Image 1: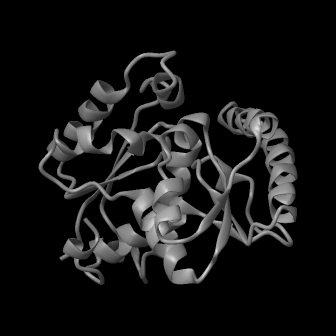
Image 2: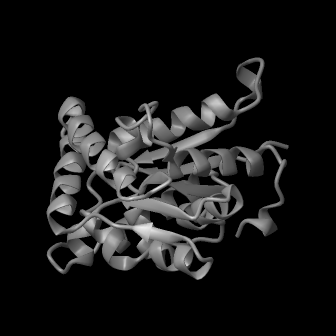
Length: 234
C-alpha cells in the first residue's frame, strides 16, 4: 500500500516544486495511478530560518508546527521538509505531530559515508552553517568539511537569495564560482546544503554535486513504496 507523502514547503517555493518533481521522477511508475499521493503545504509566510537562528527575526517554529499539523490532518503519513535550515527545528516540529518526519541532513550524511568520499565542501545558508547541521556529523565519521571563508559565505548568501528572488542566472554564476574555488581547495564534492542551490548547480563539468533534496526524494520514494523499512530511517 503506497503511503501518502506530506511536503512542508514554501522555503522557498521553487525548492518545494523541485522536491516534488524529484519525487515524481524517482517513483517507479508506468501510469498515473502508480505515482504517490503527495500533499503539499506551500507556506512562504514561514519566517526566514537563518534570520531567526542568528537572532534577527521571528521564530519560525510555530509556523512550521502549524504546517506539520495541517499535513497530518490532511492525511499525510510522513513528512519531508523542503528546506535544509529548517531541520534545525526538527525536534520541535516532530513533537507536534504523530507521523514521522524524514531527516534530510541525516540521510545526506549516510549517503556521503557510503560513497567513500573523504573531503567535501559545504555550501549552505548562514543558519545551516552556524548550527553545524552537517559539519559535526561528517566530522564524527572522519570526513573533512571545507567551508567558505567569510567573504565567500557572503557571496553564497547573495547567490541563494538571488535564486529565491527568481534570478537563477545570477545565482548560478555566483555559486558556480564559489564551487570551483572549493574544488581547487581540495573538496572531492560539493554539498548543496540549501535546497535552492541544486536549482542552478546541476550537471556542471568538473563538479560532483551532492544534492540533499535528491537524497530526501529517493528516501521518501523508498519508504512510500515500501522498499525501505521506515524503522531503519527514523
